[in-house]
Amino acid sequence: MSENNPETTSEILEKALRSVPAPVAIIGAASDGVLGGLTAAWVTRVSLDPAMLLVSVGHSRFTWGLMNSSSEFTVSLPTTSQVDEARFFGLKSRRDVDKWAEVDHVLLGEGIPALRHCTTRFLCRKTDVLRTGDHDCFVGLVIGAEKISDEKALPMRGADYAPRGD
Image: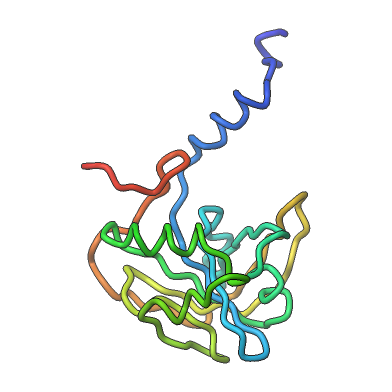
């Protein structure tokens, strides 16, 4: 391949994509009284005025269905001391366990769960859904934001979210 068009294997592509900085976020959703949530690293701001966030969720995730059925969702940014919570929401499925019954949380807006203890949490009104391969991107207008703690937010580190000494 030429310098302007490098050859890319799936292994190189995966390593390269993991180097893109990302937050760790706990996404909350609810529909018909069923609460769901998952850990997501594909979360970003997409507008300042009005304030909007985008969350990418895989089609196979239980929470994806709840987000499709609801007009709101939450984004909670855990602290560096909340690795266990981030792993819990990332490794367990609502199909098997009611995750929100296991963690301290609040209900925002139309009964959407969010972490009680975190650095920051947002309540978003869903404005658009973009289908992008095996994930959908949920775009939300921020209708509520709270800065809960001055502790640092937990960052994604490659394929894991264990904080490192900074």
